[in-house]
Length: 122
Image (tube, rainbow, N blue to C red; front, side, top):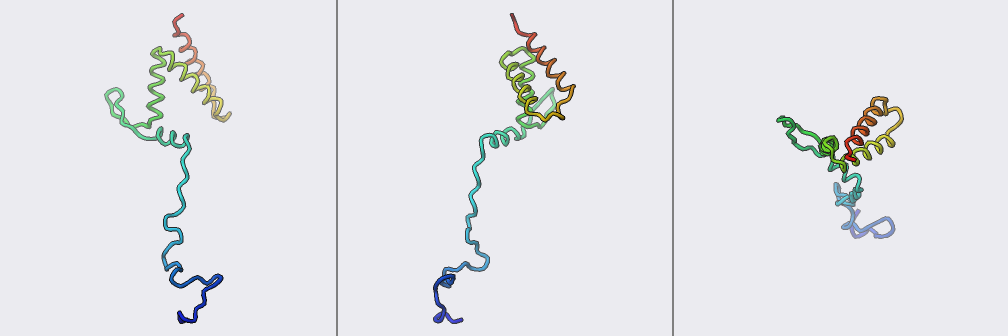
């Protein structure tokens, strides 16, 4: 078809403005959605760190490091970390599915609560 006889109109764009073969109509693509605060926190907590524990270098994620430090400080008698740990454990038990909570888990939580509450100076 010669250019001189080509009519521009409805569903007939000018030849110069048509997409070229292999060229996308949206070269930058769809924008990525913004991550929520909980997704960002999950990503940060999943990052791996090198930690020396008992003279041995280990790699563990930030969440595990945080929980280990919290448990260690709570058992050492730091009441603020004890309360934080008890709150975390009770929330975790409430949100866990019924079948995943075992009698052993409940026993361990109750023992930990009794140890932490017994260490309170009165």
